[in-house]
Amino acid sequence: MTPMHLFKRKSIALIVSLSFVGATFAQSSTLMRSTELRVDKMGSASVITELAVGSAVQLLSLEGGWAQVQASGKSGWVRASSLALNAGASSASTLSAGREAKGNTALTLGVRSIGGKAIEERSNRHALIIGIGRYGDASIPGLPGAHIDRESATQMAKAMQVPTSNITYLQDDQATANGIRNALSALNDRVAEGDRVFIHYSGHGTRYMDKTAGGCVEALLAYEGTTDATIPNKEMATLLSPITNKTDKLFVMYDACHSCGIISNASTVRTRGIFNKNDEGALRPKFAALTDECSKPVNVKTRNLLVEAVAQKTLPQDIVHISSARNDEVSFDDQEKGGLATEFMRDCMLRDAKDLDKSGSISIDEIRQCAQTKINDRMQGDTLYKAHNISLTGNADFVPAWFSQASQTAPQSVATTASTSPASTATTPTPATAAAPALTGEQALKRLFDQRDGKRKVEVTAAKTQLKIGQDTVDFSVKSNKAGYVYVALAGSDNKSLYVLFPNDLDKNNRIEAGQTIQLPRSNWKVRSQGPEGTNQLLIFVSDGPRDLSSLSASKAGPFIMSLNNTEGRAELGALMSRSATGADAACVNTAARAGNPQCSDAFGAAMLRIDEVR
Image (cartoon, rainbow, N blue to C red; front, side, top):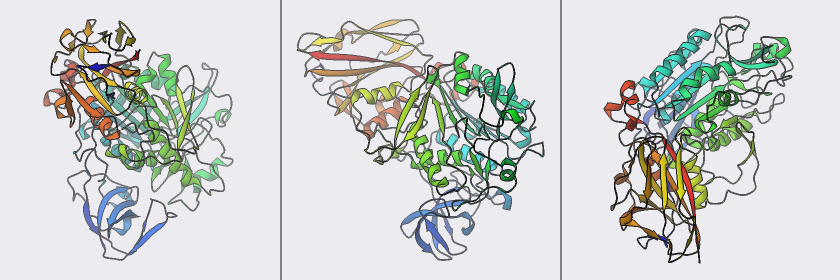
């Protein structure tokens, strides 16, 4: 099947969520004392080389008391305290990074980029970052690493293109139960249809008896530290419901746990922490018991945030929920680096995660797998505690940002298996013995299809799904419940190239109105089956705002755009197609303007269509 005799070469399309992350900046510095350059941010990590006092280094990133530097042609990590840091020396960004207690402000600089392009902040991205390191009730143990989690979460938000002006912080006594409720209400007021939201909570989780629920329920513990000052999952889902009804994607991360789990002497742990060879400071469990009967993981109502949200008719496709531990485990706070889950999710999102399936994108599950490996390494050798497992529910294929590292080769030691319930998909890591095989065109398109907004319904009906070579032509109709712009991409069975079939040089009118049905291909660019035998996949999506196809570094195949079906080609096209050409315009900055202008939205609906060619 070849459009205008082009179909003999089969192809792939890219339409995913999110976009570019900032280019790497560097700040010059010197060492105030001799130190060891290590391969990772741990005192037990292997030493690359010894660096003498006065050595010149390039500071790439400063994270939780450690600095990533380049020195003598080698890159690694040193203690931040060994550097002579000049606060505000870079225009890239300024973030405090674990040295606040000494009054020092340092810079967090390096994040991977795609195509060398600087970050493009988008007004339709929002973040709410909540951190509670000290509680009003003196009996609740403090979490000194929570202020570092604030900065780590900020880095994650920046990577997801959230402007500084769209980030709201609640810290310590600001994060009362009503303070959290009011912040979520204000967030809802700022969010327009098709926007994207990131919420991060660092603090204690808890569990208490709720007779109306028939057992123990899980909740976040607000600043007051009392039973009345909790936000249970059911209430959180209610508070988030008006937001999820509007957002393209809602990404919520809890760095807290809901169980005393394996802790046999919680009071001892809370007062003096735990140490092992990998510790920079005391590890503290992120759990506070409010009632004895619910302190242990028994009689648990396993109603996580996603389950509660789905009960309120939220689509699992449109929500991503990360929890730092399973409901019967304890997660930990490091007073020097922050929560282990936040630290390592940040590292993997910004730098370390690999494109395991070579899709051209790094999914949230690939980030989770990377972070889990780091937690396992961090807790290795601990005589008291096992590693806690990061829990992911909702859309595991969600792509939070596009990075140049998406094209790097994946390691052969990581894989994942999934267990599915009617309401959610949860993933847990399992060892693997071989690298994931390259994606077929169908699998690659499915990854992109999974980035759709589930509230946008696209119906595609084919006249025939089995075409006789040399005789039949492609013929299908498209209908959308939202007005927008139609794009059609083709992936064939040879996995060598992809085509953007529509719009094209012969037919640029891709506008569709809500409820309208359009027929494709139109009469002036019919596509006839030319073989060879096999399966072709079409991805049809309807975006709220238009896409600028002219900026693609792709070749032309007659009237159609053609790109390669490899990681670079999928990443470039995916990053472009996932964002509206007008979404970053000044006219879209104001919430009211975005609400009245769907072209400011990056959201899209999608459908897939299989076409078989036979003799």
